[in-house]
Structure formats: C-alpha cells, structure tokens
Amino acid sequence: MKKIILLLMLSILLIPCYAKAEEINNNTEIQEENITENRESNINEESTDIEHNTIDINDKKNNTNTEENINSDTSLIPNATAGILMDATTGEIIFEKNKDEKLAVASMTKMVAQIIILESIESGKIKWNDIVTASANASGMGGSQIYLTTGEEMTVEDMMKGISMASANDATVAMAEFIAGSEVEFVEMMNKKVKDLGLKNTFFKNCTGLDEEGHYSSAYDMAIIARELLKHEKILEFSSVYEDYLREDTDNKFWLVNTNKLVRFYEGADGLKTGHTDAAKYCLAATAKRDDFRLIAIVLGEDNSGVRNSETMSLLDYGFNNYKIEILKTKDDIVKEISLDKATSPKISLVPLNDIAILSKKSADTKKYTYDIKITNNNLPLKIGDEVGKIIVKDSDNNKVKEEVLTVTENVDKLNFLELFGKTLTDMILGNMNFV
Image (cartoon, rainbow, N blue to C red):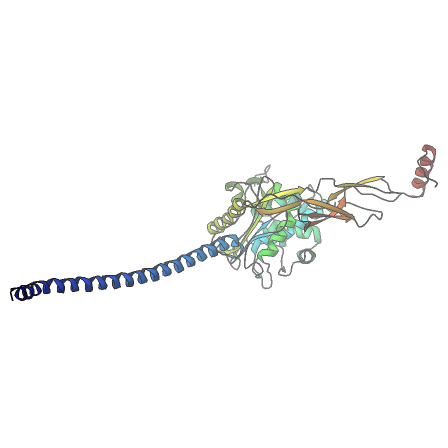
C-alpha cells in the first residue's frame, strides 16, 4: 500500500516536468521550423541578390560597351546639333552625332574656297604676290571682314590671311572674283569640288557661308572637306597663326586675331575654320596634331563660342587619350623601283599616294603587318599623282587591312624618235643590247 501511495505521489511530482519537457520540445520544433523558414528565406534572398548582381554585371558590361562604342553616344558634345571626330590620316570616324544631317555651316563654307585658292596657286594659275583689287561687290559684304574699300589692292597672300584668320567675307569674294571672274562662277567651282569629293549632303549658294536658303552641308562632309584642305599643307601657315597684321606700312594698319582660339590654348591645335550666323549658330572645324597623330573635329549648331570650344576640345581629348596611329609607310617612302624601256628615266620610284596608317585603341595589342605590291599601269607618259599600282597591307592572318594607290616620284615621258635613236646607239656601243 505504501508503494502505491509513493508511486502516485511521484507521478504527481513528475507531471509538471513532463509538461515542461513537452513545452521545450514544442519550442524546439517551432525554433527548428523558424530556422528552416529563415534558411529558405535566406536562400531566396541570396538568390535575389545573385540576380541583382547579375544585372549589375550586365549593366557594367553595357557600360563597357557604351565606352567602347562611344562613337554612337552624345555625351561628348551634348549641346551640338551635330558633330564628328575623324582621324585625318586614315579618314576613319572615331565619333559621330547626326553626321549626315543637312545644316547651315556659316563660314566653314570658306574651307572649299581655300581649297580652290590653294589649287590655283599650286597649278600656277595665280601667285602669292599677285595683286587683287577689291570690287564694290566685295567691299560691300557684311559680316566678318577686313574692311576692304572699293578699288583697294592687296596681295593674294594677305587676302588669304584675312580669310583664314578673320574669316573675312570681303576678302573671300574678292578672291572668288579674281579667280573665276564672278562669285557665281566661283561658287560653281566650289560645288563641283564637293561633287568630285563624293559628298552628298553639301550645296553652296555663296562663297562666304552667309545664311541663304538652300545653302547647307553636314558634319561628315565638313570633315572630308577639312581633310582635303589639310592635303595642302600651306594652309597651316595661315590657320595656325593667332595674330598678325594687314596694311602694316600704312596709316590703316589692321590687327588680325584668329577667330579660332584653340590655336592658342589647345596643345597641337593649328587650324582650321570657325563659323557663326543666326541660322548656323556657332560652328568649328578644328584640327590638332600630336606626334604623328592628327585629328579633325567638327561641331555644328552650338549656342555660343565658349560651348563650341569646350565641346570641340572634348572630342579632341577623347581621340588623343584613347586612340593611337601607327604610320606603316609615308607618302615619301619608296616601296619599289621599276625599269621602263623608251622612257626619259630608265628607272622610276613608286611611293604611296597617301600615308598608310593603322588607327587603333591605345589598349590594343601591337600587330605585325606585311604588304604586297601590284603594278597596274606603266604606260607612258606618267606624272606625279597617276596611279601605277597598289600596295596592299595584310595582317598576320593574311587578311587585307589597307589598300593604297602607288604613284611615281617624278614625271616620266616617252622618248621621242631622236632620243630613242641615241639611246639605242649608245646601248649598242656599250654592249647593253640583247639580240637573242
């Protein structure tokens, strides 16, 4: 009996402990469930973080692509209506914004007038010391000018200074009349020149760039025109000068200050042409050279000259900071000599018509190149500039990367009868003829 009573008392005492144990067990299960839920939650959160990281990585990739393809971005020149950055040697485009949009280009028009003036000098049609007399039409031009008076005489060289530095409308019209007889005929020459360059978005109504319906160009066309102008290296003797004087030995001494301020403040800048009218706003064709690397930057439709200069420098900075040029052959490098029978020169040297260069990112690996030469024309006479063959540049995988025309270093004519007879006689005496 005592044992039964003791067992009952012990059971009563153990009931709270059991209940407590059950509570502990239940709490443990709840904790384990919470832990499981938290783990699942953490897993989901980690998965979400991984997805976000993936997006971030993709965003970074997209950003990288944007940096690599900045030529389709507008961040370099956000205020310009259009613009372009071009390597002057290869003609390759590094950056573009609305490059083919037809726009007023103001005095940048004068670059084509300068090309025609320089071609006239080089062909011997006119000379630098020729005297140009200003007509009433020329002296009456408004806008930028050097204040020519009707009947005033000035040399071609001084007129070119006025055009290049002061963007003088009066000097431009005076030169147009001097070369072509009238501005109308000179403008026809200008339009023929841009047509010969293959430009599709340019047409001129005047030689000065003053606003006129149907007078337009584009950023791309202006870059090609600037590149063509730079082939006449004499232009840099005018466009790179910051200040000069006209009429120095007279009482009417005139101070010239270059409208292109970059030639004074930007490293390597030495040209090329500014422009400003109500329709065109502020425009600039700038060029700068560092070592062998020359760039052409065009901005059109800027709100003021300060922004115009700033955004032009942004283009140039981007090009110089991120790209490099490798000159493989210059236009003065002789790549082959060939013998010609019945020619005034028994041997002629072949050179590239233009420098052969490779444009690449500074981060790109240096590559090795080889070249092949093909002679396509050795028919006499030949003159400097004539195509006599091609030089084909190939990379290490034998892929063609460049092709350039070959020309001769001197004019070569065909021997006349007497010259040919004398040469034949000389060869016979010296035993140079092969009768087999």
